[in-house]
Amino acid sequence: MAKVVFQETQRFRQIWIWVLILGISTFSIGSLFFLEDKAPLTLMDLAFPIGMVLLLNVLFLSFTLSTRMEEDSLSYRFFPFTRWRTFRNEEVETMELVEYNGLWEYGGWGIKWNGDTWSYTTGGKWGILVQTKKKKILLGTQTPEEAKKAIAQFLALKSASPES
Image (cartoon, one colour):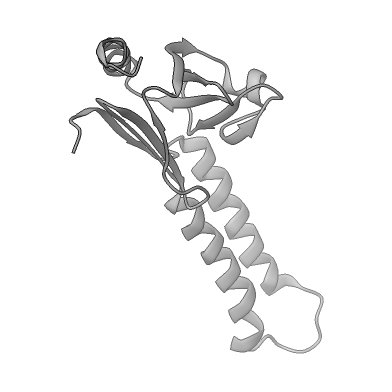
């Protein structure tokens, strides 16, 4: 098993996102009680919409971006949408720490495609830009200094490996 050089797990932590989600959830559930319906609502009438709102909140809470750099590979996953994806060091052509604007360059955070690069981010302005022969991906990071050191170590190990 290869030695882990860098590991990071991120979630959406921006307060404005949670205020928005809780506000929409509260409005959605609250509006059920003010419908212009003649018959009073029963528990069964409320169960499905409240269950859906709660399910969507739990789903959003589960969003997790995990990045792991080992001596011989780079892996990432955006749970629950992607499984672990791994690039062996010989597949990675370039890797660098970049500063980006998620809103302007990708249209927001999450899993995005801007016509050139797949972006997996949860916020912030720093990312690990990885170029392989087949694709370009940006993996957001909240620890740019640690990521920069790990990238340098990964690239040094890559250049020292016999396959390179």
